[in-house]
Length: 159
Image (cartoon, rainbow, N blue to C red; front, side):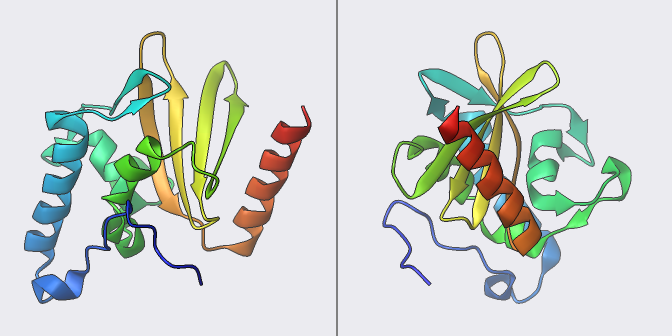
């Protein structure tokens, strides 16, 4: 295991909130709110926005970075995602460092940039005309997922 870079915030652990899910969720949301609503990170000179549609009292962009599952209505919290909410902006702002693999991925007509920190945590941004949209961020724990991302990155480097 590598050491955590100084620029990467510490994990936000549920145990620090004595298992009080409401307090924990509120704190992780306050971090996300600070990083993406009160101010915005920039990537390649353009601001990064989130999907601001309100769902369950908070922006859709927050939920998509904190929960997992195929259907939005039935997604469940992912503690590993919640713990790393502060990592999203930090990774975007440090995307040019060698510890972050960066590549472009086309999904239909949409151009996405993938930022993969230490083959551990992935941030996905989608290009819009005047800004970037944060699509999602999640831990890459499954070896099959890591292998797929490695192939994509290698193919991008070859092209």
